[in-house]
Length: 317
Ligand code: CO
Ligand code: CO
Ligand code: CO
Image (tube, rainbow, N blue to C red; front, side, top):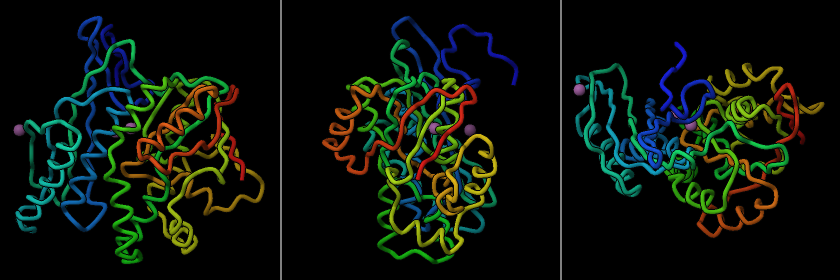
């Protein structure tokens, strides 16, 4: 991509941030993001809700407020009943309503398999943009949703997940990151990103590289959906998780004897994962209490930002 020359682009592509931010006036900037993916669960209504929660997440990660969105949908109209398309869009529309925005238009095309997501338009004060590029040495790292979503959705595809586990995982994916975002803005934090396809360590790598720092993560402090462990021990993990693991070679320092399964869980590709927040240590306990008061019960402090000229992530058991 050519370099961006427009001075009103506050956040562009160079820091691999979650959304682009474009200054309209000294008081107002717009936030732009687009996301779509194929089904991660069988139930079309849940898939629609998850896709919308995921698309909106990039806006919340930037500390912004979504205003309106457009549907983007690919659908094999000759092969699948249109009632499935209706359910996907109903799930999406209900989730957008929950977020307080309208879906004001969109575009569809005939496709080999379903794909769904949103292009979202949001707003933020130009001086209150939260990026992934401003984490500071000494910050604590807070994660707001448990890991394991990629491994569990892969298990769902091969009938290795109980209805109860599916229901619980759908609820995690469909949870909006709006409250987590509101709380972090109220407390005041240094950097944020949301955890999606590159996994916890992939997105943390983007944060430390953009911020020119390193990080330390302690596995025992990372919230994980408990069933994930049995599944990954059976060899279940999506291709994206393995790709993340390969990509992070040399960027993550694993402790001696650390199992491949534990490495894969930390690299697991998430769909509509939580926010990863770098917060000054003095505010970290307040942030955690406030997140839990807002109903985000799994929020946990998983590590800290450290000095490292090579921007590596140091993992401890
Ligand atoms: Co993102
Ligand atoms: Co995105
Ligand atoms: Co069109």
